[in-house]
Every structure is written in structure tokens, then in C-alpha cells.
Amino acid sequence: MTYDKHYYDGTWQSSTGGETIAVISSATEQEVARVPRGTAEDVDRAVKAARRGFESWRRLPVEERAQWLEKLSAAMKTRVPRIAEAIAHEVGTAIGFATKVQAEFPIMMIGMNAKFIRETKLEEELGNSLVIKEPIGVVGCVTPWNYPLHQVVCKIAPALAAGCAVVLKPAEMAPLSALMLADAAHEIGLPKGVLNVVSGSGRVVGEAIVAHPDVDMVSFTGSLQAGRRIASVAGEGIKKVCLELGGKSAFVVLDDAPFDKAIPAGVNNCMQNSGQTCSAWTRMLVPRSRHDEAVEFAKGQLAKLTLGDPFDKNTRLGPLASAAQRDSVLGFIEQGKKEGATVVAGGGKPANLPTGFYVEPTIFAHVDNKMTIAQEEIFGPVLAIIPYGSEADAIAIANDSQYGLAGGVWGGTNERALEVAKQLRTGQVDINGGRFNALAPFGGYKKSGIGREIGPLAIEEYFQLKSIQR
Image 1 (cartoon, rainbow, N blue to C red):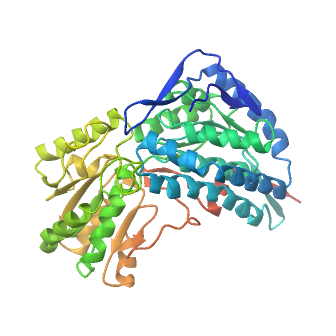
Image 2: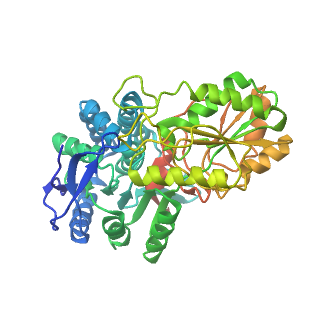
Image 3: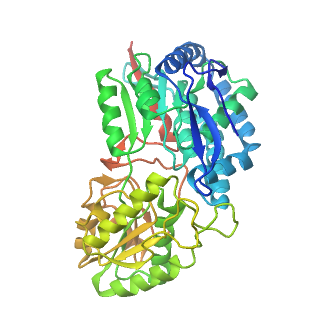
């Protein structure tokens, strides 16, 4: 599978540079594809195409834009098996999860944004003013590798719905699904310049997008360190930014919770996508008096999550996305041991999987919230079980983090769980097994970021407000 060109101005364009990037399978460690290593000149051409595309796209009636999104969603549905296969290679996602969550769900979200924009009120009378929502302009999108299509769609679908044009840099390690999206856009004849994709590195292509004077807004998902850099560069140009920068989410298990339900749910959430999930509940807070009981339930559930080849239908947890990510996670595990936490499951490389970027799913017990493994985003299959005293103590520990992206609470009643959830400084909280809601806004407090994605409110990020007095 090889894409040897970028996509902008409605066609496939050769890179102005001669270098390419190898896409490596996380399971076999072999090359599965190559894509162009973009240049600042490629970005400049793509942004100019986006500016031209924006001028006509923003004038299209809402209904026409909505229909284009529906056409794009339909074209992507035919590509689901290829998308899932690519992401299983790139990220290590188990093929079943890759199909349903990494491919089918984001494709559905493209179509959902058609519905959202149809229902969005674009004009409102306030006193003697007519307040109008207008598209912000050209949006630069820089996306991560862990949910490569999902994070692309979270940005481009509401942006296109709002009337913006997009220049997208997909993740260097996982670019294939974004290029399939470009292929689908080309197939349906999406107007020129509306969706533009330039593959390459963050330091070159990402930086050029953020710094370009004709980019009006930047939407980024990735690390806190990279987010700081993007906010700084965008600030020089007084650009709006939407940043989703990760988390260290707490799952608070209250003393009256049914441990046989709560603890397995917490383990499953933490280990989803082999822990390569920004909103994962990586800190499990349990009553000190029931700590050992919680550990046994957690170990029992972890044993059910089969680690192995992502293309085996029985696999629940695949490898990590790269050798660097594997080594980083193993480094955090060693740090946890040094700081005095107790490994009760996993803790290293699996002996029976010599090829691939695998790490054993790992549980630490007796974790203090000041430890590195409780404060830093590990982005791997590592759960820290933290004992607490009172309910107030649990809330304080949950909030003792620089992040505030997600979290969970499980109590004996919904009412008690809700009262605790309201006190957590985080962007979303699931209580007593509450399911993910594709209509709810997603984003964080504190250093987890700025702005919201997903659902009808996400479109609001891509508007400017104009007040006309009369």
C-alpha cells in the first residue's frame, strides 16, 4: 500500500521534496507502506489551494455542504476493511476494535455532522443586533497516531460542515487512513481545495501549517509538549487554537460500589487500544480497606484480555505503535518499580511474542499519587491502583493532576456517583458504567487542552461571530 503523492487542490500532487516515510507494522516490524515526506513548500501550495477553495465552499448553502459530507461518509464505508487493516498495522489495534471503533465509528461521525449543521442556528436576533455565525476560514489540522481516522474526522467533519476549508497533516506513523479519506474525497468530486492532505513530520509540515499566515485556526491533538509549541507559534499569528493534549484520568470506585462490576469495567477502559488512549482511566482509586480485594478483581479481568497478533480475532490487546513507544512504556514501568509501587501483573515484554512492539499489560498496586506512574501520561497498558481514605480524599487525589480530560465514578447509587462526578475537575465523567455518547462534547480542563470536539457543539469551534446593529 503506497501513496506517493499529497492531495491538494482537488488532485494528487507530487511532493516538492524527494524523501519518503516508511510506515512500519507494529506487529511484524516490517514496512507496509510509504508516503511522501512533505516540505514547507508543499504546505504553502496546499494552504493556497485551501484559501481558494474556502471562498467558494463557504458560500454554498448549508444543505449542499451537508450532502457532500453524506457522500464522503458513503464513500468511506466501502473502505472499512482497508482502513481497519491499515490501523491494525500502524497502531497495533486489534482488528475487531479497529473495524468498529477506528473505522466504522468515525465514518458514521462524518454523516452525523451533516445532521448537526442542518440543525445549527446560524443567525440570532439579540436586541437590535443580528448575530451571524460565519466560518472561521482555513483550518490547519494536525492529528495523532493512536486513533488516526477518528481524530481526523473529529476535526475535518465539523470544520467542513461549518464552511471552512482544511489543510491536514496526519500522524507520521499512521497516515494511511487520512490518505484513504483524501482518495474518497477525490472519488466523489469534493470541490477543489476544500480538503487538502500533506503527509510528513510535525517539525516540518506541522510547523509550516501552524505558522502559515493564511491559516486562520489550528486544531491539534497530541502531547502537552507539542501543544505548547503549537500554541506559541499560533499565538504569534493571533490564530485560534483548539488543543486536545492528553490526560491521566482517575476512576473513583466508592466504598459501596459493586466491585465485581466496577473493577473489570475500569480495567477494560484503561487497557482499551493497548492503553494508547488519551482518555483512558489509568488511575484506579479504591478504598484503602478494600485495596487488596480490588487488586484481585483487576488481575482476574486482565487475565481475560488476550495479548497477541492484532489480526487474530481472539486478540483483545495488540502491540504498541512503535519501538519508541514500547521502550517509553517499559521505562515508566521500571520507574514505578524504583519508586516503590508493586507490580501485581505483567511488567515487561512477553516472552512468547518476540516480534512486534509488545508490552505486557501491567497492574501496579499500592501506588502513591505523587509517583511518576500516577502523574505522567504513559500511553500504554499500565494501570495504577491507588488507595484512598475518605470520599473527600478520593476527590482530592483524582483532582491532583495537571490534566483533566476524562474520568469515571462508580458508586452504590447513581445519585452518590453523580455528586462525586460533579466535583471532579475534568471534561467528561462516566458514572456507573455510562456509555460513550457521540453527541456529547469531548475535551479537557487544565493542561488537557482548549476547546471541544465531537457532537453538535464541536461545530461552534469553527465559527466567527459577527454582530450587525440596525
